[in-house]
Image 1 (cartoon, rainbow, N blue to C red):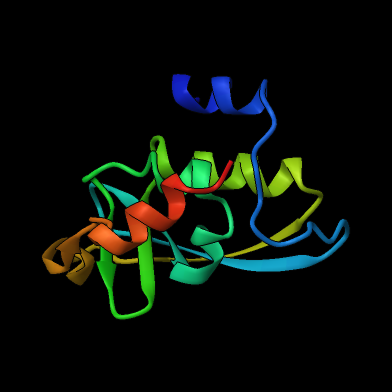
Image 2 (tube, one colour; image 1 turned 180 degrees about the vertical axis):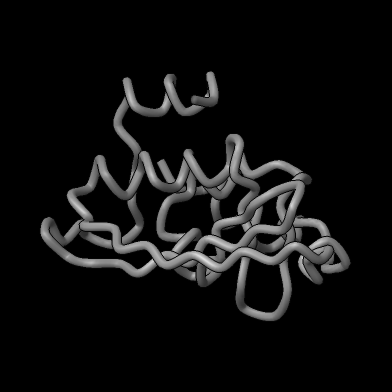
Length: 121
């Protein structure tokens, strides 16, 4: 487990929308021979500002999706979802070939996104 997610699990995570305990969320895990990513809608990630602000540059983005690297970033979001009572349903897809995710843009918050997330108490 990632040390950062241990810290996150021990403190409350602020959610922008009211949590809906028991709500299900489908998460897609994609991996190649060397690494894996949790594919999520960008707006889901942004519901948890504490998490969005901590996502590393080892994660990727393309259009409205973020691909959270498996070692820490994915665990941060899963810990926040669990803390807010979400039921997580997983699907997975493995490829022995190099994943196209590796050629996507590295995750980076825009100036406006960062300002918005920083303004959340």
